[in-house]
Length: 159
Image (cartoon, rainbow, N blue to C red; front, side, top):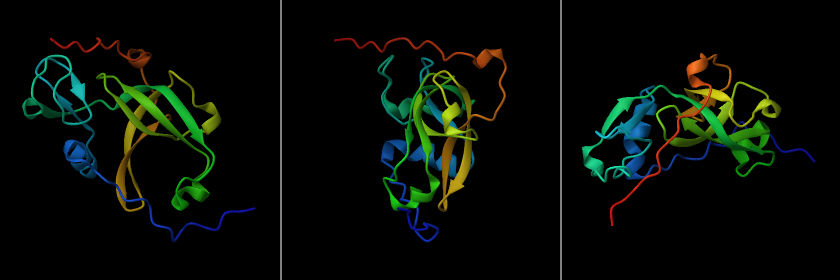
């Protein structure tokens, strides 16, 4: 059984919570940015700092390297939305960014069978279905400085 062509099926709409709006505004401007706390922690969304409890409003948005490694992934081989029916298979992964936060994204520019945990990637911004999105490109070459993800301290909170 074959799936009908999906060239006329619209891409699922991007629904953005208010905490994520600055991140997606930057993506729409072809910039990969992270929220940065004065204590040095980075986040992909606006939130209170888990390391020092600083308020979300004290965060600043700064350019990020976009470099990271695949922490875990899954290969989708069935369409969970009609738009993706003729785009199978594809990889959805959690990428640990060099700055520390983890981000959910697709791994692109490689065969799905070659994706592996620990693989170095670089975030790229592309258009899909009329919307800008971030994806993790496996085709980018890196130096030794990105061979492993950073060690993140466990968040601690005072009682």
